[in-house]
Length: 236
Ligand code: SF4
Image (tube, rainbow, N blue to C red; front, side, top):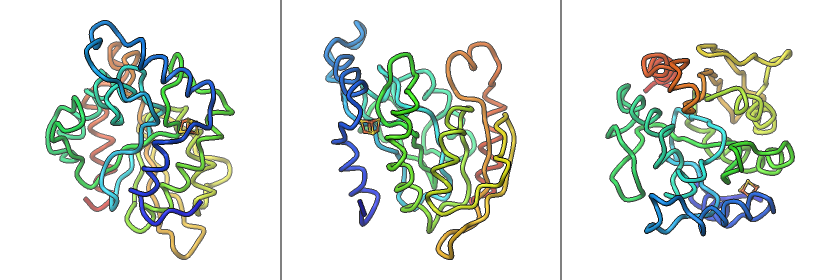
């Protein structure tokens, strides 16, 4: 499917029902809700990427959280992981305010877009390999639509890193062999495989999951250091 721009792609993506298990889960969570959000109307649909269509920096996570993005309808909005990510993006000048709580809160990303290889909240935050592969075409399309401007990518976590590699290849970049290895703070240069693609700088960071941030495995300073390097590599 060819989309004329990101807005058109996002409109189609928000209606996707290709994964029966994830459709059932996201809608069940939206119906049953967490007690503390019982008065809210959950989004309960695929969560699109967020940020300007001419972003120079792309952040790639894993999938929306059941009571975060799946509730608010915006990537990394309304949960603790997003609180950590967006506070760090604000600190390095990639967001206009440090907090994002709901759509319409005025939060904007500056020159950056945030997306995920899987766009529906999975049970236990674990998509199956089939679900990951089924959702890949959205990421390939998003990378293609961002190709005129995107110059660096930050991947949060090893799962997203592995999911991104085949998408990069299919979207027109030359992923080195052997494949770049994930780690916190790693950086790789990715060459274009087509004339209409530009070189990319690829960065790895531990995921902003509570498991990592509560234990201090990932500190705000560590995340800000990676984001800052990626921002600079993107010419921002
Ligand atoms: S995970 Fe992706 S492919 Fe599967 S239903 Fe959601 S948007 Fe569609």
